[in-house]
Image 1 (spheres, rainbow, N blue to C red):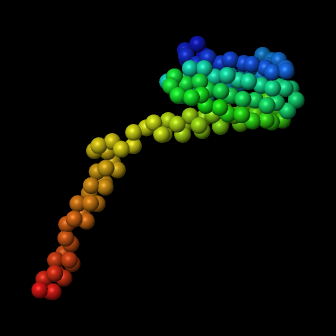
Image 2 (cartoon, helix red, strand yellow; image 1 turned 180 degrees about the vertical axis):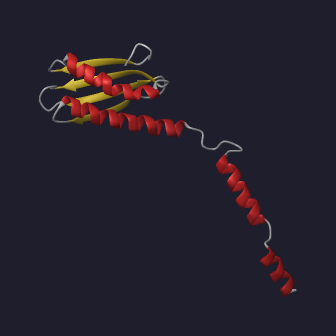
Image 3 (cartoon, one colour; image 1 turned 120 degrees about the vertical axis):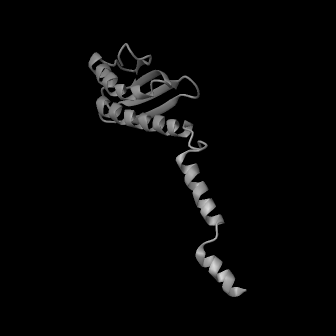
Length: 135
């Protein structure tokens, strides 16, 4: 990511070295996660056997809570990184949606529900006529 963001990216290679070209590709793809910058502190890219059927793991450390982990094995490092960024973004999006306050007093859903309840509480013209005919 760029100097403007506070998210740091760490690369760790097990049994192999992650080349500069691979790191540049990963940084470019991980830039998509910049919109979640308010939550993320650090992203670790851990790769095992980078050049032959790499097993890559992305660990996103957050300001609060447990780190999010996305792990997969693929045919190439770049394809695996692309897939893992999608997985991690989905996890971050889901977590952000859970944190969002959906039950805001006076919000759209609450007002619509109150209207339905008040409409159900009032008698319709047909109900009034039926009552008068019964008596």
